[in-house]
Length: 144
Image (cartoon, rainbow, N blue to C red):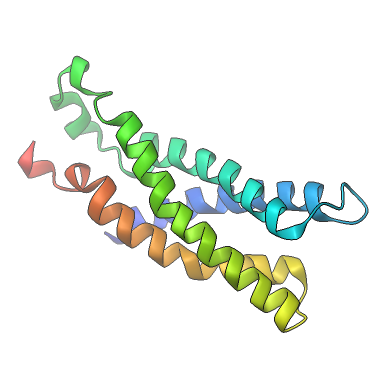
């Protein structure tokens, strides 16, 4: 479980880079200067797509398990997992957006520090729920 959480966090780290980069491009007054809430939602969705791909092929993939699954079944549920990941992490985006606004607009903290803290707090939600409901079958190799 710790190894999987570490991988999830590393993938999440790549998502943070994507999220922060897009948030900077969209919301920073020296760039496009768009609305911070809409910019955050867009940045988070792009980061979420990045994270789903890497979690699918690395974090929750176990080679021995994968090879036991017939090739025609390997892609079964991919769209379902993507949609479930989007729903679970969509709740996380909502939480992160509320936290970002609270830290930045409510407390007056730097937008990027606020965003990083919001992402860090939401990581536990995203990992816990995705591990339990989205990729649970991959976590139990004895059942395959």
